[in-house]
Structures are given as structure tokens and as C-alpha cells.
Length: 564
Image (cartoon, rainbow, N blue to C red; front, side, top):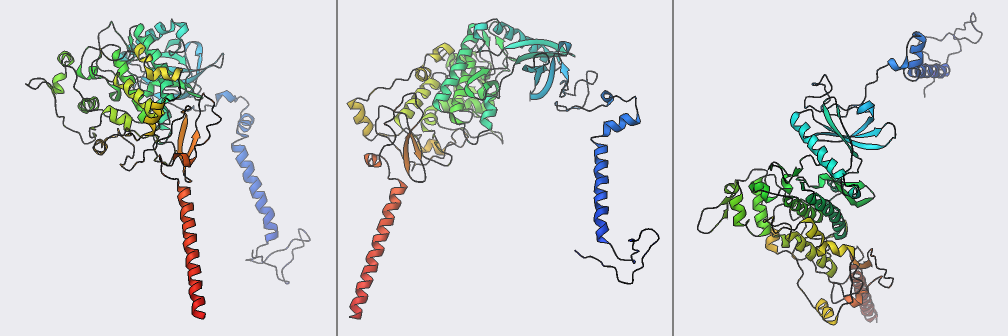
């Protein structure tokens, strides 16, 4: 740093201090400048503290009558839009109650608002704390509109009926309290974790759900649907958004929520129900329906857990009906089409050849209908066992689970609701019962011969895959995909993993302990699977080294002969 020095003939001022020096114009004393800079920093620091930390103390000194509580600090607003518009400034323009952090609602200010959990067409759900017990609950605040208020009252009545069965509280969403706050109907529920829809969206690619995961989740939902059917209640809105986990620790322990659009089988039917992706053919055709429409939504949900995407991803009902006909490979039965009030919009009913599907006008944002059937999709869907691996798990246990899943879905996703499985029948299906008590028996000699002999792998046809331009089939399927088969083993819990070193066989998690099954040597399986890359690399290295050595020795021999 540049430092200016005073010349020898500088003027010395002895009037103030003996060491005081009167500097010439243009000269700076950097020795004293450091102390000046530190004084400025201290002064700025003191100003900052006075404007922040000591601000209340300064106000109290200036005004002894000042009280701390009189200072207004605005609370964080959770509702969107947040501008007051209706209900004396308590509601926004959409008739939603404006929720703010640390505000209180309920009788005697029982609940303190902590956070917003969700907001939709019905209203909002806030995470609240019971002030007396510090218990965390979920409070549903309905919009201040007559239609939504009536729907909220109906939901409360249904939940009160479900609460009358205390021995089934693990299956149903528990209603703890209900009240009216500034014209808004409010219902207090037990606090659950996130929905399966949010869980799936947090994962890259398809959901990492195994067949066992799907089976255990399905059992909880089927038990709930069985109790609802017994009580004559139609949920009408079964979807992943309305299936919440009780905690993040266990994905299998789930509950079905949102009974706002639920119907009783004894009341008049309303066809403005069910989300489009999970809408049943009865609702689309306006055929009289019952609890069977929940089973259709359940079948779509199970297929989505396996595929990772919705089975019928369209909001256009014409496209939905075309997808259903293509996937199931048949038309709705004639008696169903005769009962439907909207059948003429989707089918040509008059003709010598029988009912025929109408060609709908495709919108710009709609997708192409796949020509793959349900069997093509379930059997041909690739199960990935690694992040960057395209290998397919085609062992016998996996294909057996797929066949059970296919049979399970083919008996649920049917047009005729009279032959569709009900919840109790679905609980007795082999796809569900196999997870409770799996039986593994020793393979017979015939089974050994069949398993060792070449057999066609259940993959969807190339034409079906090529024509499937929709989002139903997401696997990168090629005709060159290797069919990997494993030799028979009494302990079938073998997971096939493909790594950079080659194909490794390691036991997966199983209820049956098998310390002997650690690895299958490659030599025993060389006729059934391609050699690992590691073996190929070693062979190539040895071959190259032998060739190099031979060439080197040959050149040496030629050189020696030339010298001689």
C-alpha cells in the first residue's frame, strides 16, 4: 500500500500537542487513518444495534407509556390469494378463509394454525396445534358457499357414521371435532403424512414399488372398501391423491381420505364424480352405478403403482372410452349400452353388425390411443433393478407375480359391474393371499426340465410396442433385449443385478434364510446367459498379450537371421 511520508521541512504545530503535525496539502497520514476507520465501524455497528436489537429499549426510553404488545407485527399469510375481499375481510375473492400463521380458530380459540397442507376447490386443509394438549391435527376449512357447506356437512355425517365403529379405526380416517368458524364449516381429523401421489412425484422415473409393496397397500385399501360397501357408502374419488400414509416410515400403512363427494347407495345418483383418470365406464355412459365404481378406480390405482403412470391418462371422455375398449379388447355389453343415457355419444348402436365405437375428434393436446392390451402391458413392462440399467428381470418368480397381477386386474377392470370383483372377493384372490403366506416347494423333475428348456419370454409384441405412442408404455423396449433365465432353486428369492463388472447374482431380502445361496457361479450358467464383460475383457487382454509376444519373438528371430 502507498504510504505518504512528511518531508523534513514540514510545519510543526506545538500549540495543541507536542506530537501534532500539520500536514501539507495532498498528504495523508495512514497511521492515524486506521484508528479513524475502526471508529467508523464501531459507530455503524452501534447504529445497527440501535435499529434492531435495542430498538424496543430505545422506544421505551423515549416513551415510558409504550408497551411491547402494542407493536403490530404482520403474520405470514398462508391462503392464496391473500387480499381480503368478502365476509368482513376474513375471506378472499374465492370465499376461502384467509389463514395466517399463529391465528386461532375453533371454539374458545382451541386450535392454532401452523402451516397449510393443501388447497383445492373445496377449501383448505391446515396443520394446527391443539393449544391445551399440543396435539397436532389437520383442520379442513370449507369454502363459505352454500353448495360446499352442504357437501362439508354431508362429509361430516358420513365420517360420524364411520366413527361409530371404533374397532375399525385403523381403516377409516378419524374425525375428531367439527365446528363453524366465521361462516366456514370446519372438520378436524387426525394428522397423516403425505399422499402416495406426492411420494411418487418426489421420485425420479417410475415409483420404486415392488409387487410385495403393491400387495400390502392393496390389502389396506380393499379392507376399507369392503367396510364402505357393507355400510352402503360409495367413496367416488379413489385416487393416489386421496391415499395418505400414516407415517413416512411405512409406505404400506395407508388410509383413504376425502369423503366430500361420497354417496349413499340409497340416495339419488350424481354422475359428476370420479377424477377422469380413474373414472369408471358406468359414470361415463351414465349407467346406474353402485360401489363397483370404486373397484374400477382401485384397479386403475393398482395398475398405476406397477407401471408408474396412470393407466388411462386422458381428460377427454371419448379418448378414455377408446382406451378402455383397446385395452380390454371388447365393447361394453349390450344391456349396459341400452341402460346408458350417453351411450349414443360414444357408440353407433343402430346397425346390422351391432354396436360400434364412434371416431372422436382428437384435440391438439390429446394423446394417441395405444393398441396394446392389458396382457401386453403387464407382461411386457420392464422391471428395472438399477438406476442406469436396462436389464430385465425375467425370472420365474417375477413372471408368476405378473401373471397373478394380470389375472387380478382382468377381473376388476371389466365393463360389466355385475361380474367385477367386489372388495371381499378381491381379498380372496391369489394375488392378495400370496403375500400373506407364500409357499415355496421343491421343484419336481418335470418342472426342472421345463425350466431348463428354452421357453418364450412374455414380452409385448414389437408391433404393439411400436404403435404405443401414448404414455402407457414407458419402457425403452427393443427386440435385442436379452432374456435372462436362472436355474431352478428351492429358494427362489434371487435378485439379478447387472453391474459394470458383469452379471452378479445375489440373494434379495426374503423371509426365508438361505445362507448357502450367495452366488451362482458363472460356469454353471454359461449356457443360459451371456458371459460377463469382465470375463470377456480378461480373455481379450490375454489374447492381445499372446499376439504381441508372438509378434515380438517372430521379429527377433528375423532380426537374428538377418544379422547372421
